[in-house]
Length: 522
Image (cartoon, rainbow, N blue to C red; front, side, top):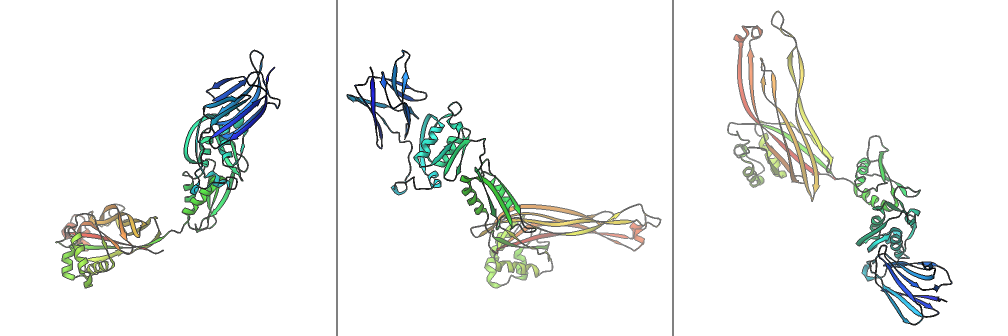
């Protein structure tokens, strides 16, 4: 005696899945539920199924498969078991009002959805795997098998997948619980696999899921990029800051002897990550604008009325700026910079710049120290060093019989160094300026022949319009010197030489003006 299962029919609607079982008589059954892992079982007492045990996978979350098999009970009775396997437990409805039919149904969980552009259906059978991986998905699982989650995710989007045995082996694979909302399929694959010690890569149009520790042939692809403008070493270092995957690597090398524009970049990484790498390399390998920087170092001696810096108003009254059409701008300039007590800056238009230079050259108290020019690329520092080498007389031994001493010369450098880093932004040029100025402010020694070197430095950031000039002033040096006049031969005689020597002390103030003109050339 027993009830025989004769047929199984399925109705798969948008929201409900119906499983209809037809028996040769009114079935008797018992229900059991399991919470962890979630499952639902119906045991048909002394039930029979002549077609044999089977397992059917379904892609209708929360059920991922159901199975029918003969099962021996503890009382040595053979039952027929229908078991539903859940990602997340859901209510199951049993309708046995159909006499010899029993209908099992469950609501589909809408946890796997696709955002369809313009409300149009997406034909996943005809889109590329790259497009499929960029589809938007929301997932929710509790204590689900990783393999089952991957299978549901990939089959729902028409993606072919090969799964390593490690993900199938129930003794080693991990179960996961997760909730993801509005992420790409690619991101979901990363989260599901990588945080659990697995990895995946694209082999053509097929996803291969595997343990992260294993590297398969074909997992990594290599591409060589030819750099047109960028330094391959710099780009390679930038790729290592989050662009390359953990298995990826890059190396830059040059095929030229002197030029870096022949650089090449070799990158190895997963096929799925290569488009992002290509976009990143292209964004860096672009022609960089060049900036020409013209600098003038002008030193002017301050008068007694200019203890706090150049009195531009007084000098303008004496000499007058030219041309006349700059008078208004020049008066505003005087108002802004009058009474400099520390480092100050002013922006000069071309006419005003010309007028200021004419004003400085009209007197005999100003001199052009250096006029260096340099061209650099955007955001690259330009270093300018101008200096003077001063020989210093250094005695070597005690004096001879007639009061003479052997001596040698040592070189002392007195430099003005300027580092300017320009950066173009919105038509303006931002200048990061580091300046160090050395100057001789006096002399010491028995013969007042050893210089005293003063050093001043400053750092600043300023924005200048293209082609305009930045004037840096306020670098004032106080110089004290002592002149020694001697009667030839008699002034060098020990003891009595002082009678034939006259010392004169002098003091003066000088101000260093730095004019910096950046011009965008390409």
